[in-house]
Length: 374
Ligand SMILES: Cc1ncc(COP(=O)(O)O)c(C=O)c1O
Image (cartoon, rainbow, N blue to C red; front, side, top):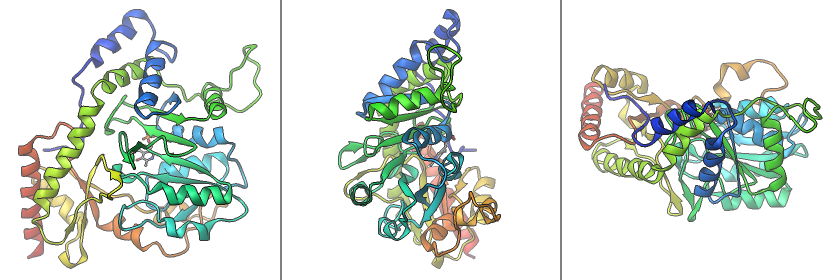
């Protein structure tokens, strides 16, 4: 079976984790947390990095550090992983859903302004599957309306917009280092910001809002700390990040070359201004193929290829159908999110994929499509 994604652990991971154990620094203090924060923020050219437990809480910490709170609204893409919405809900603010655009699979900038109200405080964008968002028009809307911009960069390590790394395109950005991410710490996340005050706040809130004197607290904090053990993995991974990003891009170009021969399949987007890092290699089945996506995935699995469906759009989440004032308004038309969500799937995308594996996956894709087309 070719798995949809496995981590690549081939550098100094064991050495650095062993060092943590040998020196007894296994909690969230220790040199690897600092090294990881400095290393990853340098890699993205951002002033501050605040490591935390995972990408979901990185988003929450980002919002809290900007002061997003109840009675605020935050605009976000309808086509995303649910953590984007949850992080907003955790603050007491309300997510406001915007459809995606066909060109990049990211939030449709032309549909943002109509959703702005006097409660709107921020726009949270998400760089879908490693393709950066077209930021300039979004930053312009934000400036004109006095809104913050937050990047959910969980999926886009190393991606670039007009030669600038994601994570450095907004007020504050959040990354995930879950095991399927290009750079992993097992579980982990990081907030990046160039704003000194936001960074200070994020550090404070991450650590249960401890101040001096100790055990005196002025705000509601969270234990969102990353351990030195996990950061040790991250420091080792960072030593090879360029290689892992290049591998994702090279694998994608091999896939695209082979898949272009198959009629009725849309390959991942790549805007002229974008460096797409293809965190996951996603394809969309055109309706003219007349193939059920889930049946295709099942057959591929039987043939030895693991795949995953695209996200179910937020407006179709059973949770958000409940009548609860915390949840986003799910009424309205979201045709692009639906097209992506129900016709998209991603193929095995590990950095370590070999040419033979890529060819095997595409052969099986052709075979399964042919079989289901009959
Ligand atoms: C777009 C997006 N945001 C947030 C997250 C949450 O990250 P984590 O799983 O580390 O909590 C993910 C995770 O895959 C994601 O894809």
